[in-house]
Amino acid sequence: MFESLSERLSGIFDGLTRRGALSEKDVGAALREIRRALIEADVALEVVRSFTERVREKAVGAQVVKSVTPGQMVVKIVHDEMVAMLGSDAETISLAATAPVAIMMVGLQGSGKTTTSAKIAKRLSEKQSKKVLMASLDVKRPAAQEQLRQLGEQIGVETLAVIEGQSPVEIAKRAHQAGKLGGYDVIILDTAGRTHIDEPLMVEMADIKTAADPHEILLVADALTGQDAVNLAQSFDGRVGITGIVLTRIDGDGRGGAALSMREITGKPIKLIGTGEKMEALEDFHPGRIADRILGMGDVVSLVEKAAETIDAEKAAAMAKRMQKGQFDLNDLSDQLGQMQNMGGMGGIMSMMPGMGKMKKQIDAAGLDESIFKRQQAIISSMTKKERTAPKLLNASRKKRVAAGSGTSVQEINKLLKMHRGMGDMMRKMGKRGGLGGLMGGLGGGLGKMMGGGGMPDMSKMDPKQLEEMTRQMGGPGGGMPGMPKLPGMGKKK
Image (cartoon, rainbow, N blue to C red):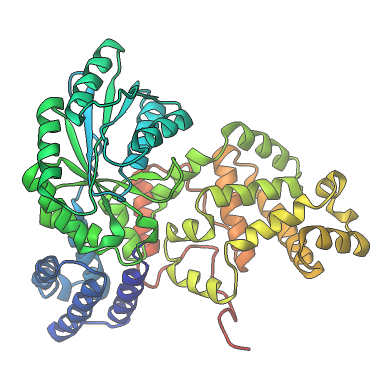
C-alpha cells in the first residue's frame, strides 16, 4: 500500500534532511516534487493543491528557519498535514443506537460488499461479542443470497432465511423484525449493486434506507479504481447519505490516491480497510498510522496488535519456558516462520517497522522473497522427527535425502541450519522475557539474522504512546531500526 508514493517522498525528504539551513527556494523545490508525487499517486488535484499550500504556509515560517533540524521539521509538517487530510482521528463503526442496530452496505457490483459484510459480522461477533444477523437484499445477482449464506456458515454468523419473490424493501423489514424477535444486537443489510451508478439503483437504496432506518450506511469502494472511488462516494452520499467508507483491495493498491483524497473531498471518514481475501483481513483505518507508513516511519502499534492477534498465547508461554532452558529446535523454527507468514510475511512485517522501507529494496535485490519461508518449512517437513529435534544428526547423506524430498538443495539446507543456530542464540536471550515479548523479539531476531543484522527491541511491553514516540525517534528519513544495520553487498551486481 502506497509503495510508490512512499518511495518518492522518502527520496525528497532525504535531500532535505541532508541540508543544514533551508531557504524558501529549497522548500519550494521540495514542495514541487511532493506535488508531483501526490498527483502520480492518483490524489485528486484539488486535494494536492490545498495540501501543498498548507504545508508551504508552515514550512517557510520562522519555526522552520530557527529549527535545529529544518529538514526534519518540514517532514513533521508534511506528516501532520497528511494526518489532517486523512481525518486526524480513527472512527470505528458506531453501534450507539437501540438494538438491533442496522448497518446498510452500499456500493457498486464487484466492490466486495458481500465479503466485507461477512468480515464486519465476524469482527463484531468475535471482538465485541455481538449477536449478528446478516441479510442479503440482492435479488438481482444470481446466487448473491446463497453466497452470503455460505459465508455466514463459514464464520459462524446467522443469515436471514431466503423467501423467493420478496423485494429488497420487504427483506429489509423482515430482517428488522427477525432481529428484534431473535434478540440480535446488529443486522447487516447487504444490498444489490450495479456495474455503474444508475437511477433505479439509487431509488432502491433510498427505499431501503426509509424502510430499515440504518444507523450506519457504509460505502464499500474498490481502492484500485482510484478517483472513480472518490466520485462514487460523492454520488452515493448525495443521493443516499453515507456515514462512512470501507476501502477494499488496499493490499493491491500501490498508489493509494483514493484513500488520500476521499476524506477531504467527501467529508466522510474511512472507517475500515480490506487488506486481503481472508475473513480476518479487515483493519481499522488509523490516519496517523497510515501517514507514518507513507512517510517511512513504520507502524509499530499495528505490528504489535497484529502479533497479539496472531500469536497463540499458550504456545508462546510454552515456547518461552523451553527457550529459558536453551531449547530451540527446528519444530520451533517452523512455528516462527509460520507466525511471520500469519503477520503478513517479511514484506508485511517490514512495512510496519520504522526505517525499513529502504532495506526492503535491498532484500528484494538479494532475492529474499516470501517463497523462502515456504521452502524452509518444506525442508523442515521433509525431515524425520529425530532430525527436527536434533539437527546435528543431519550428515551429508541425510541432507541429500531431505533436499530430494523437499525439492530444494543441500546449500539451502545448510543456510537454514545456519539461520537456526543464529536464531537459537537470539531466542535463548529473548526467552528470559517470556510470553509475547519473547516471541516478538524472536520474530525480529529471526528477520535480523536472515538479513545479517541483530534483533528488534521488545515492543510488546510498551504502551501506544511509547510506541509512537519510538517510531518518531527512529523512523524518520535516515533513521533505522536498532540492531538491523544496512546490508553490506546486498543489491550489488557481481
